[in-house]
Image 1 (spheres, rainbow, N blue to C red):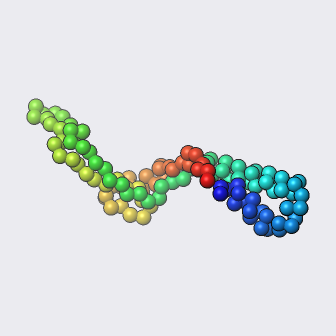
Image 2 (cartoon, rainbow, N blue to C red; image 1 turned 45 degrees about the horizontal axis):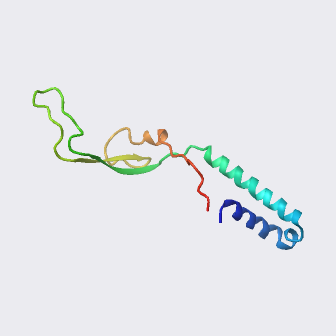
Image 3 (tube, rainbow, N blue to C red; image 1 turned 90 degrees about the vertical axis):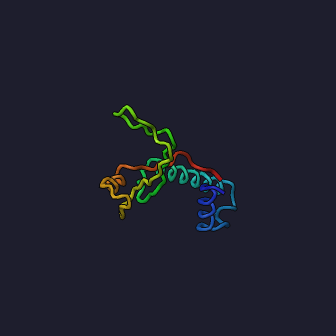
Length: 116
């Protein structure tokens, strides 16, 4: 079941099956309303910007991906380098002053609606 079917069922439950199922016109009107409500909800949600308020993620630099410059003996890293990236409103485990500010500049978008 998808969002439209859930809305349709809620309308039937609220209005009563006897009022909707007695005519094809009643079913069609509730179906149209359920479709319109679904579309309105989807349009609203997909237009919103969602901020990431808490995130902690590993960062891995594979061997050879970081080059040291400025010396004749400059080399690339020979071992993997691991660290943590963080966005948070409430903590700063990596001790970087930009952590809390990243909350206001980070977004999560709903790219497509998953149908049932």
